[in-house]
Length: 498
Ligand SMILES: Cc1cc2nc3c(=O)[nH]c(=O)nc-3n(C[C@H](O)[C@H](O)[C@H](O)COP(=O)(O)OP(=O)(O)OC[C@H]3O[C@@H](n4cnc5c(N)ncnc54)[C@H](O)[C@@H]3O)c2cc1C
Image (cartoon, rainbow, N blue to C red; front, side):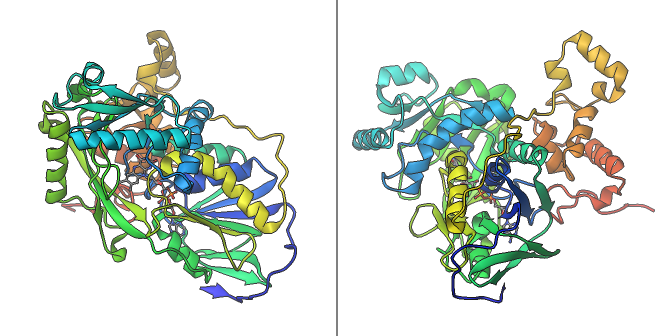
């Protein structure tokens, strides 16, 4: 809904002092844009409709920091992938997140695929990708001894990395909060209020937020949010990607780098990759869904069968009995196949950011400062940089993995919760869970993404009830009031017996 739509644009906005910016959507883009605004002299409010940050597209994807050879020169994807890739190392250092530069191969199995490797190499060189090289069969199989020996050659990209995108979403949010961000979760943007060509307020399910500027970073729903402002958008259609995750204890020695087949009409194809946690990830499929199914993240038998066939072709010795989880995520596809990032043609101070298909995760760190510039240009202003911005943040320490025995004894003497193990698979203590709650976790997923509890071999089978109990106790609510992740995903519905 748009209130008081006015067609005329004003010369200069009547900016408040300091200016207020509302960022809509707490995925990778929204949280990095919010952090970027926090570097500047302005008030920043991040509004997320979900119960926590990072539960949209940024939660379920391949987690690959792409090298950048895949994107056609001239696209926003090509322009921002390579610099975004480099920025991930800066962010890993500043925000204490995992980024492992293990490199990637595009593997050719057929003679005609060799031409594709040459094309990707030329495109990568044009895009400025460092260190790209074609490897012959001998070198490829020496680097990846478990690869199907019928592989002929590969395009090797040493700058490709693996990460866990939710780590960055959480870290960027925590760091932005330290620097003054106001975070409002569980609040959906429902409209805009404008006056004489300028943005006046963002309207939400909880009220009205007066502001001078806003960034629509609503992911799969950026088209809907643009329409709320009366702006046309490229239509965003969900393209489902299903995955299988293999157990880290038995499978991880089989693959050293990210292994892609040659790309096809629907994208980069199904990969086999080590995860930062030493598991192996297989997938994703690519299946177009109707626009009404943007929130549908179901896996399917047919999809999982395709993954198994493709993964077995790449690594014949993979033991699929080691699967610990299947999941799916939806890409925000648009007809133009490029990111859709544009200032509102109607309202000064409003910028839309949508259609962040792959490599959106890779590009997001480089996109964020550019999006801030677009807002500044749209308002014909330049925000002053703060001298007191603190760029660093530390993750929750792992007591059992990081402390020496002496240090652990001391920590347990100070707080016995540091010695109470709640997740045996990933050695997570009660103290870490309590710290996660202090930092914003309100559900099992909230704890999982902040501590790695529930993320191990048992996937919560043995520990979810204990963690649920701790969360309920810390928050002073009943266990039946808590969700696993998204609203309504209850874990305990009520008592079986009175
Ligand atoms: C299967 C798959 C594989 C991928 N693999 C890779 C990869 O390996 N490498 C890579 O670089 N990229 C990859 N991507 C792309 C990458 O995941 C996305 O580009 C990125 O996560 C997009 O982040 P976002 O912030 O735009 O969206 P999101 O993470 O979806 O964030 C948008 C947020 O806006 C919120 N929101 C929506 N509407 C409203 C509203 N009205 N009010 C308030 N909040 C709202 C949502 O709840 C959501 O949290 C992949 C994507 C998929 C689906």
